[in-house]
Image (cartoon, rainbow, N blue to C red):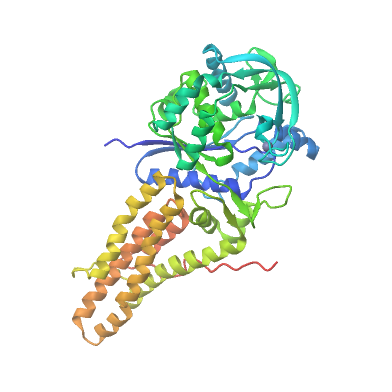
Amino acid sequence: MAADRFYVTTTIPYVNARPHLGFALELVQADVLARHRRQRGDEVRFLTGSDDNSLKNVLAAEAEGLPTRDLVDRNAAAFQALRRPLALSSDDFIRTSRDPRHPPGVQRLWRACAAAGDLYRRHYRGLYCVGCEQFYTPAELRDGRCVEHGTPPQLVTEQNWFFRLSRYQDRLHHLITSGTLRIEPAVRRNEVLSFVAAGLRDFSVSRSHTRARGWGIPVPDDPDQVVYVWWDALANYVTALGYADGGADYQRWWVENPRRAHVVGKGVLRFHAVYWPAMLLSAGEPLPTDILVHDYLTVGGNKISKSAGTTVDPVGLVAAYGTDPVRWWLLREVPRVGDADFTVGRLVARTNRDLADGLGNLVNRVVSMVHRYRDGRPPDAAAPATPEARRLSEACHRAPARVAAALDDFDFRAATAAVWSIVEEANRYVELARPWHLSRAERDGDVRAGADLEVALDVLVRACRTLAEQIRPFLPDTAARIAARCTPVAGRLPTPEPLFPRAATPTA
Ligand SMILES: [Zn+2]
């Protein structure tokens, strides 16, 4: 059977500031999907990148007294450098201001929509939030301020290009309700459907060269206008595949690929589930198949905000606590719907309870018992398994399908719970089987106890190997270390050593 193909992307963040933990969540989620698919034998391409052309970046550079180019290059490099500390398996990183694949792709998409009759010029007066890079109607504001940023928008008057979004209302509604364009979780799909049902208005897709401070991609045949940054940014999902010339990668990963998934935050859902599909419909190109939406992290009860000092640097966190503890917290604690609150205390507690005590103890115990009772040689039990042992084996057999189903639902908590059921069953089994009793009885000449001990150790070593396999997409390094501890070298398991040290809460 031919392997499936899977293309997965993250959004591309503005690079007006350094990366924060909230974006690390999105990167890690997309990474787990990519690793899981590769493990199943699928062909995978995993794209991430940076949105360099935002006006926000220009303003941040002005505030720092730097040329825009310098600020963008510096911060984009910080995003690109997350790959190693977060153990990301991304295949590609696109920078919208530097990548030669990007501008010609943006312009091709523009021309295709223009050819379809969907772009027109219009005088416009509107309220623009630079933070969101978006126009709002007064009704969409709260006390005259942007709901997302709490800042008053600017009044902008200019002649812009508009995209005929209104034309695609019925088609979008049908594509989403039919599941052709799948949005998970359902609560987010329903949000999009009510937004579409309320009536889609055409939106501005360019701004004046002056207001853009000369930064961005010029509109084809209209050098006084710069392409709206969202149009530019959304196009990255196909420009990185070589959409500009429609070549082999674009055919392979977009046109002929059955699964094209975007992982996005709830704040940018409208752009991904409404604007972007409409642009593609207009251009006559295939749509994404899956839009997978995560909620936000808060930090100590507060929204992540640079100005409020509530950002958490993911690189610093990894340096202090390790890659896998940070990944595990993001995957195990963040719910499918609803915000999750990060504190270092919660990270430390989760690391110690799950990784040091639950998982680390299990593997250390099993390897140590094989050394103590069988001189490091894992038995291959011939005796029939007990009902307790069978229960653990069944948990191991059930886990892969449960992990796959949960990840297909974009539910990382359920997926990690499925992996965790192996740890729980194995720890329970150790207490029930009590290998130390069996060993004592065996030494006293009880042959049956010796056979039961063989079964117990065999089942436990196999469970640890399954655990290593199933936890691999989530904690790649831990998985490799478990596998190494459970793989005999010249017939014997390596000498046991602790898998995870306990983490300590910092004293402030
Ligand atoms: Zn805003």
